[in-house]
Image 1: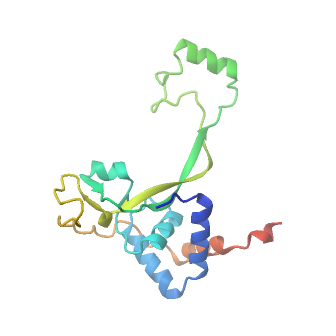
Image 2: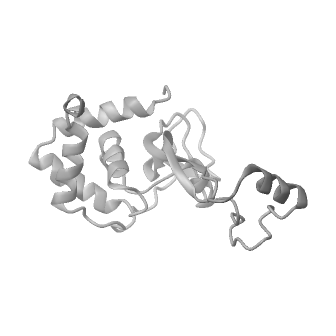
Image 3: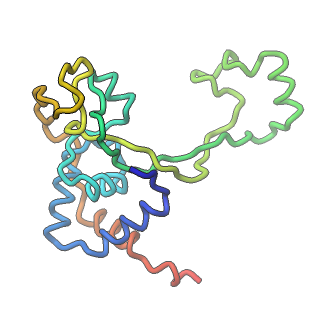
Length: 186
């Protein structure tokens, strides 16, 4: 599966939003309720467009932590992941920062719980594409099935709905944002 760019995913979501019917909106809301709330509504829509029956999605490393691995040949579900950078804090010029680094005061031991003291806040720079996989695309880590045959290991039961059903107004706002005419802003 070729890598997708943020623009390609955005175009795909825009097309899907333009074709939404009331029944499709109801299906999306049910799917969004199955997914846990750590995903934004926008990413829940991206997941639903690509895999409408998804029930539990994680990245490859998180699946490993849960004792599962992505099955051979399974394509990922593209979602948006924020790209952030540190913003220099006010009054923090390069000389002061360099002095802290040389003295070892900028090694996370000077008060920041997460090692960020004196480093400024994180700001969103943009988005990149990240991939997640549904539980149906995974197999147990210790799967002994032949590589050239489908996995016969029992699938875990899908979890009970873990998320909340998005409000109609939120879904309508997302669909309007995705289908907004970009030329109207000129």
